[in-house]
Image (cartoon, rainbow, N blue to C red):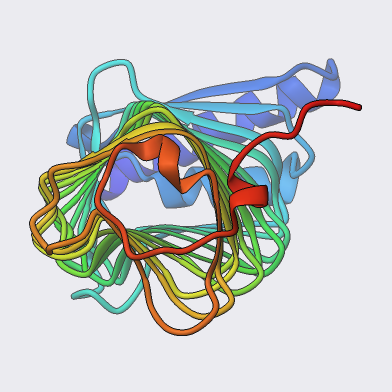
Length: 307
């Protein structure tokens, strides 16, 4: 195994030297079933070509906790459904991205860890076509001024599927399911936008205290509340929120909700849209078709003709 590791390291050094000499992008392959090491590749790339572009194609069943720090234009991709499994007994993220721009993870199964993927310290992260599964605290954790773009991922079996503070996340066609606390928590200082993603069969579907836009998708069959607004602003543009064990949408004092288009009916908590005393702010709640105790003035819920 030591001879295999030495040959692998020599190959990496030769490849990096050639790419540097001719100013080319670095493209490497890692086969974890042959005892290749993603961590070793990342360590060498961070020294030799931290600005990228770098592409690492991974195969096999990998174990470890990867740290990507101060690296730009890095793509980790699998064409064969490779997996990366936590080795820290739930104390570290499986993939920890710090102070890095345009980092892409595509096609992996990520197993366990304190977080499946951590995107932190003003990083820019692209997560595409991954299955990110617990147990652990958060499937995806985005914070400290970072931005993350999620596309067609399955995020399941965590305490919370995603946890966002002081960061921006856009989710397209993702599935958040089987998460005990909530599918996603977008809290203080966060911006979250969903495009046809689903938040089904969690504890709460969504809990939020930042700025949120829900475009299409479903928030259904969660054991508690569909969308729990602890504060902040939310705009509903076409989601279906139904079949949740509690109310469909819960608004606490000072929360703003604009129901531009939504189907919020058939929830099991007595109300489809619940405003807690005293002053949640709602607009166009009559468009949802659901049962509500929210009150708004007639002038605000009806569009006025232009004089």
